[in-house]
Length: 263
Image 1: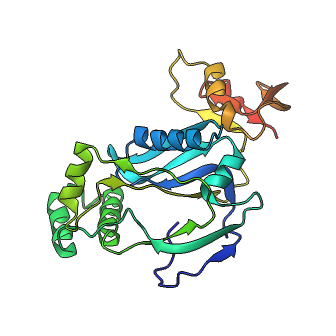
Image 2: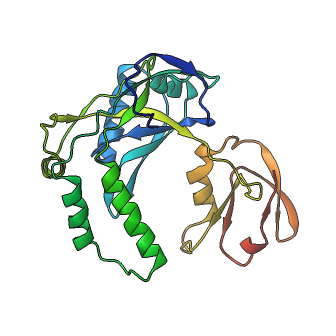
């Protein structure tokens, strides 16, 4: 989502290098909570009389927000109006300073030294060391002013959100510059990663599922996200051919280990 750090502010129309999923948004959320993202989207849809179902997933690590969210949008027309990406995948963008970036309060050397002192990890563990180095890289990256691409012709703009008391504590502790009283959302597009050939694209394998959760419940939960949840397709269960709609659900039981999705 971030572009190169350039001063060039000219408009560009282009097809994205990566394939876009026109049902998923990538939103830079800053310190926003889940409910603040939901409220901003709801207010936007009401203001424009837009009708669509949506689901918000704010990404978190160790209970703290990572500053971005993925949002599933049922209507591709609403997706286009939020992102400025047309149905062919083309978009007109420009590079702007990321409004969610602020200058950290303490020097980078002090921040790194403080983290080194407080972080507890096993130096003999490859996994711990890799995570430790990744966290150090994240600290260094947070000191680089960010530029980002935004769509010029997006019709829908999300409103800003007011910081709660807990959010203001994070901001006052982290940043030396005067910060705004409201947080901002930056809406972008989510990209589809390259698929592995061996992956069964319409099958959901579920591990460690409690006995009181049924396949029917899981199917009802995930059906809205399937490309086609109405047509019947063949599948093999326990060496028998049956038909079902996407997505196929396989719970980790002896019978599910013999499951082979088709289609």
